[in-house]
Image 1 (cartoon, rainbow, N blue to C red):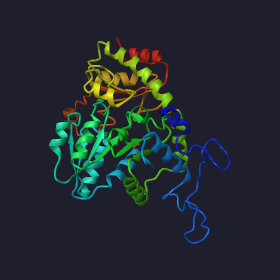
Image 2: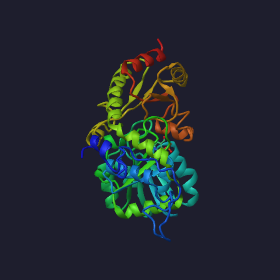
Image 3: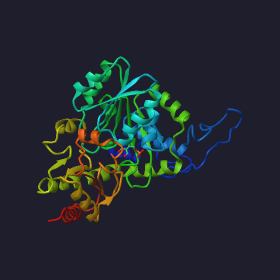
Length: 378
Ligand SMILES: Cc1ncc(COP(=O)(O)O)c(C=O)c1O
């Protein structure tokens, strides 16, 4: 089954009992047992729920994984995956990971003695250099947020294999439609499904897919133990979102190309970050490991004052955190998504105060361009 077909027919997408072409929302916490310990597949909805299970089977299919799992948020998914590791062990992460992942490692999991090193994983030698005797995992985001840095997943898989590390990939930006990390050698792929997978700014969720039965058993144990599961209503909304993921991503990417062209020619824009630009660092790698470049664009207008003016003047771009929805969103990473990263660290990473990030939606590209034109001013 090809990718677009999987989004409609993958996993469990209907109700066998009634023929309903949409999986019912099993709004239930517990299940009648026919005798003590004699239950019909489900005993308690933290452990398993039929609607969540249906979503989990589609996620596994989309990522070419063995099993899928759904959580109450992307951070719940990441936290649960990190629970695979033990106190005293060490993880290497991409240096400009999502701010919440940075906060989790530096302010929460450090208290449980889970050690970390952030490196620019777009240079594989940095990863090799950071490996210690207690290193157990690589946590990669590609493309990254907000500078769209690209990491070579084949290279990461080689390093992970050589040093017996777990390769975990946050695939939120690329989506399962454009990029399939498990096929490139990753062990675990995860998403903030709040973004493109849901796609309509109406659900907060996280999903995980794993390559092996062994990992699936461990993640299921942790999902049930930690308990940060996704509810049935939200699971259903994600399944509905997935059915149009391919269409949305195609439309978003077509709009993105037009917006990038416009921004590249604007005199007030000093730099544009988008993996589809031929001169973007890692463009060739992105092209070889993904089928598309996505819908996230960052651009620098040189000053915080102009950036704030643009954010105030736009009409069709909604000023909001988050990304990956049908409506275009605009944000100032230094003051919003990346505010939890200390200023000196942001400067090191190149996240300037004049850097604007847009998440391109499915509106008419001409309207979006006209909107940016008036917002950037004369
Ligand atoms: C790349 C990435 N990973 C993880 C997360 C966390 O996801 P959530 O907000 O669903 O907890 C986000 C949120 O913006 C993100 O952008």
